[in-house]
Length: 157
Image (cartoon, rainbow, N blue to C red):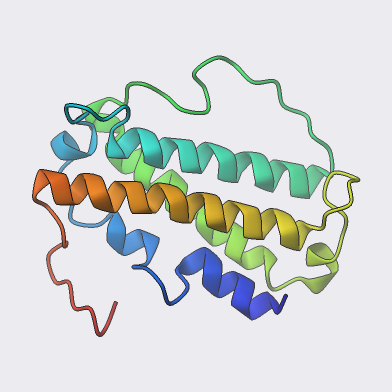
């Protein structure tokens, strides 16, 4: 896969709105709210994506799977109102770090965790994982009546 295309998929592709824009203009009270019938809040989805991004980055940088899962760690049930901005920024920072890996072909072509996949494959996997959860976030925002975000211009986004 072309490294620039992979970088583009991590950012948005042409099929959906960029992650930073999906998470923009969202009041903390709405971000942490769990709607009736939903399992997770927008903040919990965002924390979940950030957690997986951190794991992929750690795996890629150390070339070893060195984590032990703690129950609830990868998909928290509760995010405090005051933690929303930190969670959002953690996700966006991790996404930026993953995109920066696309500038290093020697890293992209390396085997991922000594398996039959490459770092490119791992980055494609996380891009698809993020797209899945970002789609859920857009749906939650629609159900809350806060989609699209302020300033939304489908031609520019």
